Length: 101
Picture (tube, rainbow, N blue to C red):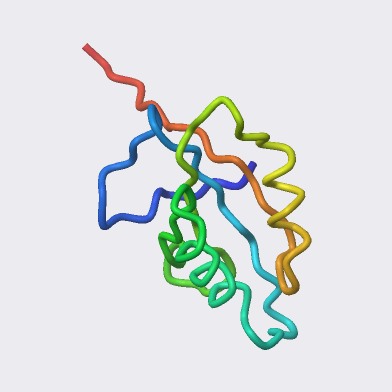
């Protein structure tokens, strides 16, 4: 699993959403770009929200999907990976800091 910080304009909500990092192929960028495709997809599917690029590089973007019992995580990952220009997709998990007393 890649070490991706959750893209912020919002506080991560791991209780209600699944977060996915989608790694993009940067050698040859197809038209439309995967980011553009995911933005359009998020406008058509209310449960999917495109959050934007991860970090300062254009090699990964993040999306979140509203949790529900009908969500098939492996199916979503496979679906993301079939998008032209996507190298891989990974489910993100919350990071917990070790607190010292």
